[in-house]
Image (tube, rainbow, N blue to C red; front, top):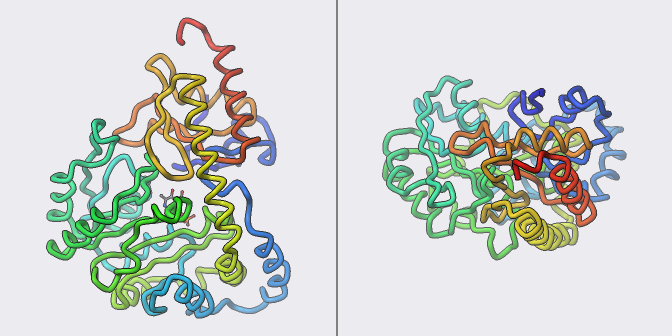
Length: 369
Ligand SMILES: Cc1ncc(COP(=O)(O)O)c(C=O)c1O
């Protein structure tokens, strides 16, 4: 059996195609958490029209998109940095602020640790507690702030899907200042939550000089292949991050698509409504049909634990043969070989996944169920 997360991620269709002998376009992908509606129609139009512009360099200062974000989010443009995905923004936080030691919470997005090591920092971690649904014990989290120079948290966290309350975020922001540590809040999936649940320090950013918020536009607007994200922080912090950015790392088509995305308020509403309903449907169907444990997250993906006799890698392999990809989560410190993650997709696609799971179970040795 191959390892379709050999580059550390879900959504690796090329590796899956090699492994299962199918074409990349044959897969129904639940392993990356991308908006199942696909990009807004306006993005395709902008990309087509923008092709004429690829003979020119993109704006290295990203003025148009920073202004559009500033208007939409009510944040000063000097507090915004555009990146080639949230991933570039994270790496710029490390490159620009040069933390000697980076704190991470497991299980979390594995890139926090990988970027830290890649760019010369040491890593200190704490592991979430099973009795807190794998969220960290506050005392241990506090120690990370005292003992490191930059702490990463996922909000909502990938792969658990759990989000912090606003009061907790404010407390972490104060801890960061008290301990002279940066707090990087990865909000890559925050826009999928219902609006009333999108707690963020963004409107209060001026009160938290040590906080860096990082957002992705690739997941919500379904453009991971185009790459686009941004960071919001104190202007001094943004200047330090920007100094380390390779000129033109964000391409012109992505910048134009980004501006078009921000105008798509109806698409945003539809997405949240679809994800809210389908998350409930998928979660309830998995618990009632199969009796598997679904974690209590809020994001556009579900973390699921199989019973002790079933392995996530095995389920992944059997579904992969049917052209359906899920994310095995056994490599996340703190999780087990029984944990897997699935994106929330459309009703028809979710039904296909449930049916495929049922078929796989029927074909599995009945002694292990
Ligand atoms: C939690 C989290 N943050 C950030 C990213 C990277 O986002 P982007 O595509 O904007 O670089 C990912 C991608 O999987 C992610 O899971």
